[in-house]
Image (tube, rainbow, N blue to C red):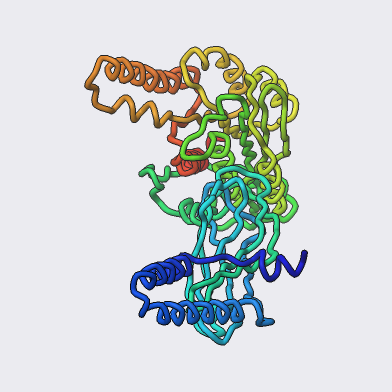
Length: 446
């Protein structure tokens, strides 16, 4: 069985051989009516058989085997273009043409992925392509298949390279550095300007000697009495604020836009925002919930916190159940004792949906600074702006405009109770969330 697979099972016939064989058959048919062509037809057929044997020998009776290796990161970034490289080498001394198939994970549903390259003798190529995963989880890559043909092009031999490996897809981390640069600019991605700080921080740093120009209100009289000279307290900017990102995993977060669910957009935004918060020396934490509590990570600013949050976000999945905001309020009161900035990623499709939960949001806002981040339905926005030509078009357009208007009413309803909000399209969620955080940070709102 092994010999059969080696010498027959990996053999394929090309279109060129079918054409050449058909031409020989036609030649023999014509020679039946013109006998003088019969010897020439036999000669042509003999040449074809010789070339076929030679092609088979070049492919199957050489001990050398083409080499291929896949280079890919052990982590892929969800929703981003991730680069994959293939190093392919032709070991033969003669030129060949290869059709290269990399067995991609089933999540991509790529049934016709193929690359074609020509190789001269002993040449190697570095081939690159990109993959854009749209869901988190484990992705299993399979073999690399090399369908090789010589310059004669009559036969093809398949070479299988064992390159099985499993790669995990994490929340979007490729653009974290870009968002770090964004946080240091004076004008953010959507045009919001940085806000001037107001007031004075009261985080104590040290006691130092008084010099001309120091605020006399900061004089430490006890230290002055002990030293016999004026001493003042020195304060620094408040940097250790607590920021908790709360992710709603309920059924409304299952809605897909651009291949990603709203939950994935929220998770990508949380990862980027937490990175900015740690850069600003704030403590960051994570809470997830649906009909029951999910992940709870206490706020901290240690370097390992970023990795802890990344691992937790990797495992989060949506539920098809209604989210329990009453339970969320109870757990927040129980687990988060210090006044913090709470950034709640959720979604409200109607004003009635908000009114069912607004009392719990108001209760949370009494003890913490609450920022509600929810999504603009881009499909409804597109329908509301489309031209209407039929009665059905008018009906669809009217309903879409009504639902889009309700999103604006949700913002006003939250503002009426003193709750801040961000209404954002899914693709701009990360930038808008970072902008709002920087604005609150500059105002020292927490």
